[in-house]
Length: 157
Image 1 (cartoon, rainbow, N blue to C red):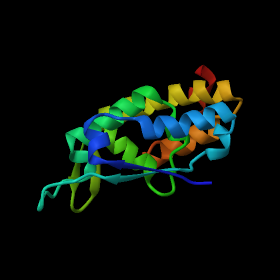
Image 2: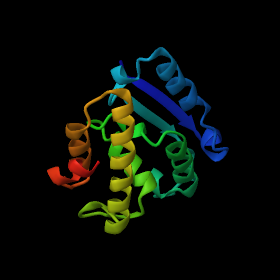
Image 3: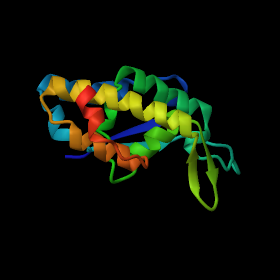
């Protein structure tokens, strides 16, 4: 079952996480969080001035809202719909980058590595707490960002 959370300009500008908190807390209380792996979508309706060419991940207010969200739920990538690009968009909100018309999004390499390692550590711990096998999930997540994880990394987790 897909979960779609709609955000608007007011909720973003006020850093209001209530719509996300309501949905996620229901899942946590019901013990059904694992049933919603890769099922979360965000519908972002952020008003821009006419002619503003920026992507959502280039808007400081939108990025700040996602930073606040990541602080509350650092394991959120587990719920994001990776196939629909939600994880890539989430990463773009949190990692410095530039857009290239020829090559698309270009992340700052060092920042991307730090982001990925942070998410690997957080998700590995959270998945273990939930009793969910983590290795293949974490390898898949890293591959989305262009990284191959060595098996030795999992020996030190």
